Length: 363
Image 1 (cartoon, rainbow, N blue to C red):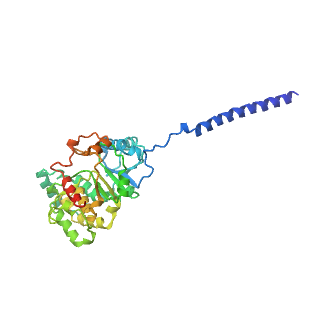
Image 2: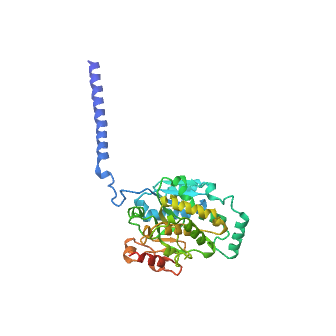
Image 3: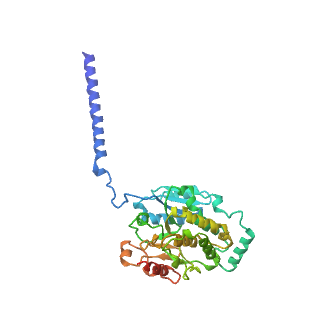
């Protein structure tokens, strides 16, 4: 009898424990399926993203500026879209750099090292000739005139960044520089705008190149065009690049520290042949050719002018030069923090009015 009583008590205890555990499980199940405990989807977040990335060329010493730029674009745009970042350096990024950059965005961030083959001055460059050119530019107070690293950067941005293994999986890129500012909310996805509207290259600031850095560039451009007329687009932007119907160069270019563009254009036959031809002259080192005029000339000649887009709504600043949206409706919609009166658009050093005239002819 005592043994039977003991079995009954054990069975009742097990049943009680089962009810407790089962009740806890049911409570957990109710909590996990309760719609009030699950965040609602953010309707402002893009439901579709195109194959794009932000791209930044930076050194370890650029850490603070890189943080400011990425924090700015996150606040004004990317926190709602989640596009990834690719940062490249000529040497490995420090652990501190990677840690501090990665923590400011939930988006994927990849850090890469540039191959020496693509970065350093080529062995076939005549160093005596190049050093003499640097000395002359230094004597003439040409900006970065005596800098080899600056020439390396210009050549790399002209012909190599889009070949890096970390960028191979992407089609579109948005170039970021350390220490730039974004003045306005960017409510429309620029990548999707470019893709849906058959745009290939875009800019926010247009200005003149320093004449002393490109004395022979246009001659080489015209030589290339004579050899390869098949690459020249109908309805191109020659009248932006030249005010003499191609005889001379206006020196107008899109300021390439801001670019949103299609890397398939740089990877294509026309630009590949163009860059290889220019690179073979050695004048990225014998002169000081910048990526801005090289990109601008290629886009202006090998694309239709309607494939190049001016982003009025993207308030942007690099150094002292700033684009601030001038239409009040655009400025207000973007909650812009910039002073419209300080916008570089129609400064005496700006080429924006020349671009406006070109585009007005298309209407």
